[in-house]
Length: 98
Image 1 (tube, rainbow, N blue to C red):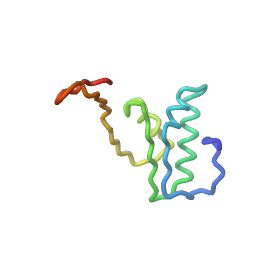
Image 2: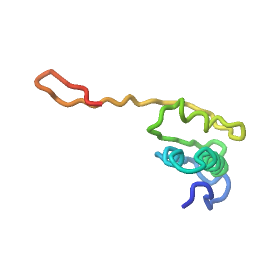
Image 3: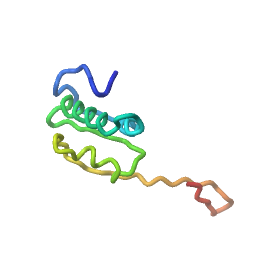
Image 4: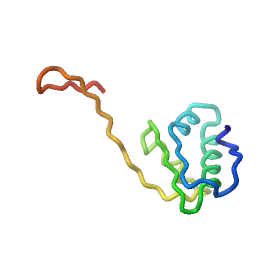
């Protein structure tokens, strides 16, 4: 299915989850336009009291611009999950990998 032309009725979904789609679009041609069209579709498809969840590997500062565009009307809450990886380097000792 093309995220810029989703064939469902308006106000159809209670929840829409984007896991990396915005990230992928931002790596392509006409990236800002593609993301803008995708988000306009999300807004059209989601119910008035619905929730849009966007899970991204990108930093919020690099993604928020797209969600705050004038033609969109999302209420935005940002939750950041800190990414830490450890390998055991002995008893009571851990070494950070990333």
